Length: 254
Image (cartoon, rainbow, N blue to C red; front, side, top):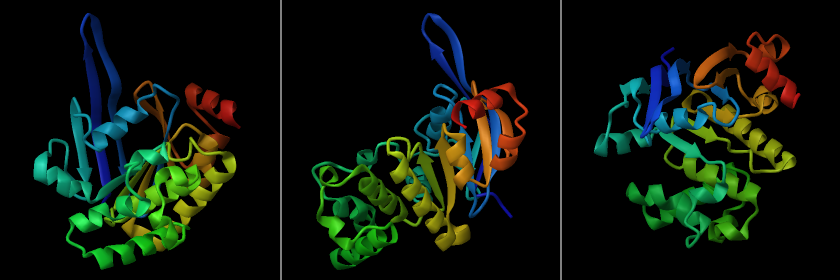
């Protein structure tokens, strides 16, 4: 089976005037397969955000390659990159970051649909379907981000991400701003979506909590100081961590 996402030798070096160069991500590589949920964990400053920024092309890689659905997107730009973005969507840590506060949730979810040429009536119908799929009633389309709870807004942001039928969903600390009960509900929703979409939807789950990753991910990569120091099945890593950093990380949350 061909990987939906393949990262090879990915490196990011930041140059700082008057200071030595800083290597934020140091020659990492991994593959994510269709229908799989891969966790990427590490403490603040480990390089998780830089990895995501390179994969989504918000930051250029210093070295290495990023292959999405068989296409090398490492140096893509313009129209080619916009086309690639339809295969890859993000769910952010702060749900309101996905929406314009001046527009309703329905407007935000339907934006990409309207841009693709879907009629107003068809867009309204599809927005209602997406909201329902994500555990909200169609009436939420008329609400503004400030009128809903954090958990409801995150459900709507997942609905927005799914609108273009992406093959890869990147969840960047998507539950960390929510309380524990709502976290569990969002994880349950993501599991339902994985089950429903099967091999058509893969998830890269960025997190700092290995206990949460254990509930959701089939594999996990442990990132420390820009390097992958351990990888494997979450249960096995938790039971038998080999790297000293992984042991400290597990001890801090379990």
